[in-house]
Length: 446
Ligand code: HEM
Image (cartoon, rainbow, N blue to C red):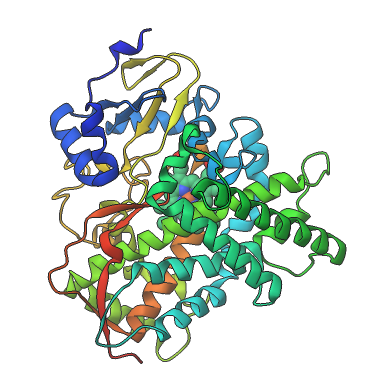
């Protein structure tokens, strides 16, 4: 089947809008082309975007041998090595994902509550009162520190400090505008330590060296009693009782940092943006936090009671999904929701557009967290974490951390928007975050 029969879509110049203002770009495409449109980027096979609910369902329930997520994710491989589960497809993907899953189960995630709260408290204590400051970098600092402690299991000792410095510098490059271009192989030019890609290559070597030494140390000393994800991976055994090779664990570590750090930080920034622009919602959420806490500390015994805070987070992820679409590359021709698609294209269910369909979400533009208290939402109409066998591995981790950080903020400071500011979406690494770092003013720290 020729690629020319694909649904119509924007030309190359209009497609730049996806980088400049992604949410507006998607709205305009939906208005002009409807539920299906094709986005073409030179040198890459076409992406067929869809916001048809049937198509989403069929993609989630479809044959993983025919719908390759690993292949669709491959452009991100430049950032994190291609041996992690993100880039694998069935059956290797399932085998490797199984080894990671226990580290992201509810109880295991809850064991990180103190680390998540401490990272939030330390950041909040540093915020200037009465002065405007960008809060999105603060969210990035919180998620970075949490991942270093709970996923990597590093403390404040000299190795931990060295790892933080190298990883931070590396992820600054990847998250920059220029870093986005590294998904195109032609842009990866190592012109020495001062060129951006050359610096990334050298920083990666430094991080690799720190990690491989740490793997050897932990294997020698044993990892019993440690709750961090890295230690669980070092202890994991496959069906033949074999450990994962160090190179694979190393790639998984980069993946978890890249997949978990900017996404959760950007989502929390959007939640703050929704709270400060909806004062009634903010007051109701704050009242819930005080009634749940009653002068107690936030910990694993009470996080689960923050139902309204969770609804606020979900409603924000509905309207401001930091990853607006995901992809599956077709390995053979398929009919999806009645439409014939050829092998080689990537079908891209559009989270952003499905989350705004009026027949699924009455009055879709209205920010109304009660939707999530009144009814359980279908996984085919609400899927900020993707779905099916590839659903985000860190969904419980991210939601738990967001509840803790947002509740700590509500309990400890008042926030208001900077005068004249209106958020639009801007790319930050693999996620879309509020523009200009989301400037806010904090008052009344308790
Ligand atoms: C609000 C925060 C987050 C959002 C919105 C998010 C969203 C997503 C989405 C849309 C996918 C693709 C799913 C698909 O293809 O169907 C994904 C995959 C993934 N995410 Fe997240 N994510 C978040 C946080 C995290 C965290 C905290 C971690 C780990 C620390 C993480 C680890 C992963 C991994 C490993 C995958 C690949 C899963 C696989 O292919 O088997 N994510 N995420």
